Image (cartoon, one colour):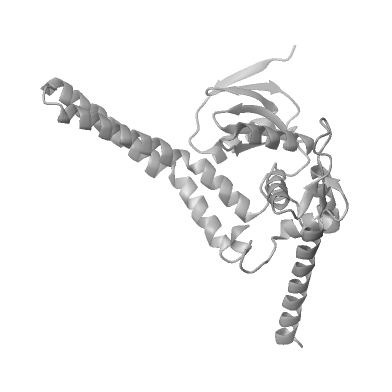
Length: 185
Length: 107
């Protein structure tokens, strides 16, 4: 029987996550399954697999077509979760690079980084709705208003951390790629 | 490929995909063929290839051959329209080379 290890971990940067999966593979732990923050590994030859994470679009049928195309080129889907796919191929000495030109790399970086704009924006809209309804209604008690302000402050701080801190590596990558794209393809 | 619309320049990947598809080929064969043609200089990533094939098929520069046969890898081939576009690009590239030689001749 193969022994498996499960590790709970969370990442805000897909590049770091991918790096970690490849590092685990190099140590002889092959990633085989993911669900809600839990990664499952089995023992394998060191560096048997190269891993990559791909951000899929919203269209489910197109994503399936894409993953089946990848399979025909020797790239397996380990898991799909919340709009992203964990992929691997047998290690042939080169890292698993799905995007070989600047334009498609830029496209992936934009898709991956979008999460740290979408979530904070959703939180800010929620703040506006909460405070709007608490303060427009004359019957709202002082306690309820206080709680609303507290919740609003927490949400605003979370949104700011997500956008400015978590989103930063993506913005830097996008800027770098755009600079390169202005002189070559 | 939006930014290429004015100049008409093809990306290097697109150029070699169209060149490969002068014979019918499926995705993986295209990737291998491009590596052989360029002596390993160019490796097309599977994601980039998929995006290019989709865009080229939409433009009718290539077409799928066995689209309705399930369980088989989809093969593609260049169309007449694609051949014209490819030849235009080859012309454009020759002009670039000629221009470069005019200026740098003797160096």
